[in-house]
Image (cartoon, rainbow, N blue to C red; front, side, top):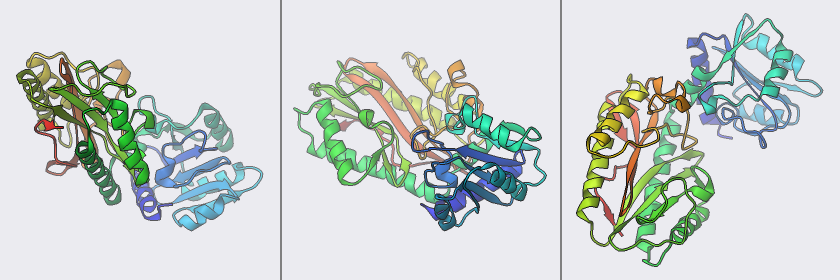
Length: 386
């Protein structure tokens, strides 16, 4: 358990509830080793078995959980603890009265568009409704979750920066060790071995992280590594991020084996210019779709087809960390691109073009600051050699 981090995030949650239209926030879960509740690492920090509720009000918080889990909550020292044996209902009602006695509207973890704010299953929703009665109105906790998860504390910021630095360090070591005979799968195996040695996780599914594309014949996308090696004068594209101390990185880097064809250099410059165009718009207060539009138009104005994904997403505990999306106003993204960028959030900026020499894909990480943005790690501004 990370008591310092959780105490800070719970304090942040109380402030978010105080500024929200709801009176308190309930995170309700069970058997979290099997069915993940995305908010639990921020406000409790350990898995539970029996039905468990974390109740956060504007000034206090409480946790209702099985008696065998209660010692962990007591050691955490963040919430008032209400253990139970046979039924969580009396304890939950007592906790709710204590934290928010006059509550009328309760925020719970459902959201149409934000997966990290949508952890409440339908069955648990029905249980919670039965437990606290019809006198409370349920509302989406999406705005509260986006505040707690999106605005990074000093500890979170430090860990994300460290994860990005480790990612760059491992990529540099891989290039130093690289042999021309290495296939995509062998590159992945080499990086996985170094990650295992250092007890590092992957920022997304282990099988696809890193995602490696060798040359123009490689299939672009979230692909498994194959038996292709990098042809001379073609690209190695790597999409990679480690998870370190619970927090993730997500960057893409490009390497050339041999000489750089003029067309490849031109494509890289166009990709960099499009990323810079999005970066030039990215600041606190803009809506996500405005940033996407700037990058998208810069790329298409240079004669390339538009990319078929969002320009950027938030990074935190997960590589795709929910909240405001730097994306187009497409139905599949719901309302996420209409969100406002805020100081303290960390985003990727990513796009690419497919060429005969390979996929020219770039992805950078930036933190939103009071004065604009700060690079999490230095951007790749030139093609690198193998």
